[in-house]
Image 1: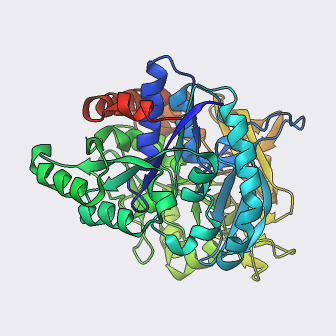
Image 2: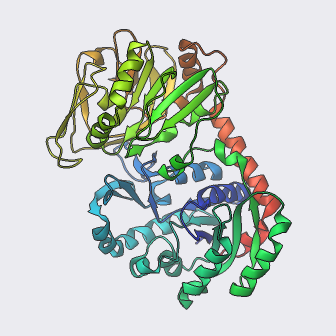
Image 3: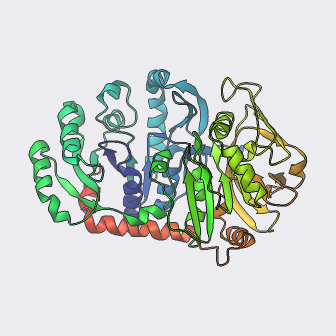
Amino acid sequence: MARAIMLQGTGSDVGKTVLVAGLCRAAKKRGLKVRPFKPQNMSNNAAVADIPDDNRHSGGEIGRAQWLQAIACGVAPSVHMNPVLLKPQTDVAAQIIVQGKVFGEARARDYQALKGRLMDAVLDSWAKVSEDADLVIVEGAGSPAEINLRSRDIANMGFATRANVPVVLVGDIDRGGVIASVAGTHLILPEEDRRMIVGYLINKFRGDVSLFDDGLKAIEKFTGWRCFGVVPWLKAAARLPSEDSVVLERLASGEARALKVAVPMLGRIANFDDLDPLKAEPQVEVVFVPPGTPLPADAGLVVIPGSKSTIGDLLKFRENGWDRDLAGHRKRGGHIVGICGGYQMLGHMVRDPDGIEGSVTEAEGLGLLDIETVMEPEKTVRNVSARSVPFDLPLEGYEIHLGRTTGPDTMRPSAIINGAEDGAISADGKVIGTYMHGLFGADGFRGKFLESLGISGGGIDYRAEVERALDEVAAELEAHLDCDAIFAMAR
């Protein structure tokens, strides 16, 4: 079995994902065979990974974070790197993905009762990830201080104690109260859990680190834990793919650029990392528009992203008045791209006769493409190589969707995927729909697409940018953390 170390946070969104990715890259640079692992993740930003020994040539779903961490390790992502993925569909219920495949759906309270059954899958995946590695770096979820959930925990100390993996606690100083959060975690953890923690680190520090010397002394006094270092605000992290909807609260419009891209923030927005390659373009400003705010009239392009609840988000789209904004954008000659659920919304009607998404079984679409969609139980999950029809350029991406879309506009497909036509384009070419996630990641296509919107000089090497950002994060961690000591604590 590989040696392992786990990062757990004093709370959600303390930066564990980027820290694990950076440590993975740092370990890889030292010549170690390193792998990421997250027992349980909650995110609608999913990626498609290989399912070992599956002869159907289909893929399985994992959190986007573990896909990124696998890249940091220089290995192909596997469903075993994130054996349990929760994809929220409503405020109280989520779809459960186990080892890449749909396990079922559950309300939050019911899911707690299921956790005991899921631990076997977690430990099975843990063994598979560990068997071909020197080091596994594990990411927790939420916080071990949620002691009300401890009895059935599979994400933090429940896993760490079962797998005997030592823990480094991560505190976020940017949100304030970091001394209390670290000391408070020490105070309320039961002794069995407390002794799993071998030390802590402070993340997201801005300014002169020496100003926190007294803070470190106070934490040592309260806890006795060693500090592995204080990590500054990692600017390179902004160039990495977005993990989940938590970051949407912080996304804001940047400086005005040649092309403004408006993205409505759907309630169950999914795979919005599709926009990351556009955000990386120097002449493109991507604006995520929150509910209650009109779509900007000066946007040249509106992208309707994926959704985990197409009908529910379509109804909210109208409540927000975005349908009127989009119609105005269309009349002004603006361009529109719908991806997956966003593609389905662009048609005349979305039907869900089996109630897969919920009690509302149909909704009128936005009517900007002459298509209709019917939800079907079987889910398409696969990585694909494709070709753009309008630009005759290669595409790479993935599909994760329910539903079959038909109609006259599908006679003008947006892509050819594995020899089959996908998507639809309006007669004037200004409204495009596709089931393919990741299309903007194809540098040649993105450059030509932007050129068609009047933006020249596009087409940066986006994957190389991600690799450079991972290298920069790893270098910062090497400079500010005692990485030797962290890796030495692995067992």
